[in-house]
Image 1 (cartoon, one colour):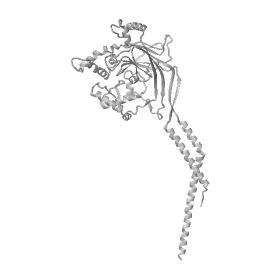
Image 2: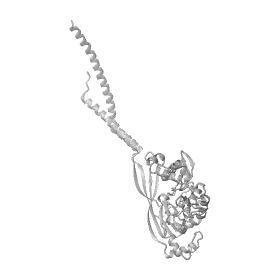
Image 3: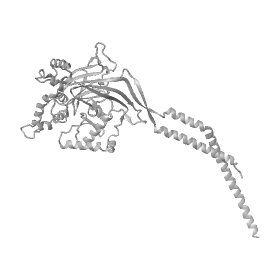
Image 4: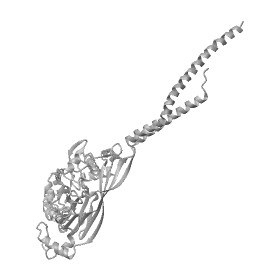
Length: 480
């Protein structure tokens, strides 16, 4: 019989254990890599050529009373919207204020829609950026709630159009204050009487290539003050798949939205815009119309196809249907996830954090200056008694807004992979190298062990086969 020495048996066991440990560590490396772990690296970078943010402003009221009243009355009469015809009450005007606007949008009559709101030349007295005159450097857009809006320093498809940088200064003009400085005469006497609106101006800072989400995050500024907005910029970047579920894909309905008023726009993907479009698509499927609050749109992706859509008529059953549909999807995270799986986070997020301070204005010397400026400026609509009561009107309508960078630094939040491919391969090699001798020996010893074990089994069987015939023969002899 073949006997295996106990020392050799222990050696076999240790070899098998070593091989198992190696397999365990290598498996752990693979599992760690497939989790795709990340960490956020924070750095502060000096960037003297940093882009100045785009600035979008909207009047505090979407409609000019003197321009919109007569067309609205005509619309009410034509569509029999009066509650006591043939008379038209103030409630009729209030209840139908947005009906005409929506009808024009549904018919793609954007220029007529723009004409009923405040034009930039109606309210802007002066605009400078680091000494440059910027009165004509604005691009218009339209908000369902705020009406006409205007954007400074916006990215366009035309690459020859240079965006302003914070260090770009007009050396031919001496100025005490850098940054974007705007002076407004708000013309609140011409505001359309809608109770939802206050007096003032709405503005937002955003990156030049981003859709201004002014209805989400716009700041409100009151007349009778000089406001200073000092901002700092931060940038957050994500790696994307497989590390983070972020995207930069612009869908067809998002492109249609960006090009609705100006096909020279070059905006990037926005998670907020994507979610709004997705919710509007759900509303359309439920009610066969939409009711946009944050931005106008006329195309949506319905069941994978870009489809022309219309806006619901306010205060009707279809309007109430859209409100219920919006509440249903907005208040149900599971439904939102099922309907909008493509609306992932942005891979690049620009953020402008700001602090606001204000002074009372205008001063007496400013009143004298702006009185002369307004009287000599034919584009600013004023009341007939403005010359006699300029102090009263300026107190009500004057607003100055200065937007200034705090410094030239950017805070960068950068997602970094903590376990990259090269580290993974290195760890595999390290673990293999650590256990290589033992592992190889384990395999050979295991083969030797199995071979010896099989020999033992065969010898045992052979020995048993030899023993049995002898026992049989002995029993037979005993019978005689």
